[in-house]
Length: 289
Image 1 (cartoon, rainbow, N blue to C red):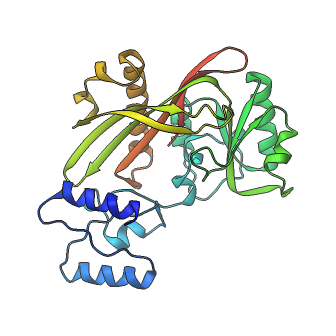
Image 2 (cartoon, rainbow, N blue to C red):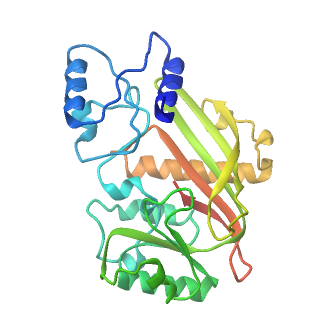
């Protein structure tokens, strides 16, 4: 049994009312068959392995908060960490569907950084961050668990990270301040059918390689209901930091729902980092989703 199937069984138990794990869909043909069954009256609860991407995917599958656990977005960049960084210098090189109002709203609550889609912008943004903070971190948009990220000490390091000399960066990249003495926390909002829950946690740092933002586990406090129902005095990171992290997570979640109401995301996770830059200045803000 795969991990995804194990999760599906757990979700079926939580949903109750005779819920069971159905077939695993691995092709468009299988998906069409499942959709036909749904039209014929067999109710389906959708649990995708990855974020669904497409301008009509929500409508075509009849997805809503009550029958879907995961994320469905219109554009590919909305499924990555690019979504939570403003463009460098309001660059005209941007993907279709870029929402500048959302990126401006979340920039006030994120650590300093930018989304870039061409090498010129990448060099300029990296140089600015190096001049101001002493060290930068480059991240590829789809990297996870520490993969696809590079510590940048000078603009020359960009050639090592991105050896392809092409001017355009079709998938984009994130460049942000690199922090030390960090604590990484997370706030998660869940909706599973009619069930709603909130979780707050702190990740354990992987000390084998301090240059990689990779966690080796986490401690979480979970509560049914909205964030206000959580007893933050029991938060793993302590009450003071816990309240600050929860406030940041709630603010980011409100911005997402205000500026991007077309997205369907029933599991929303916001990573918050606390640390200092190479000049000794303290930062606390959104790291990524």
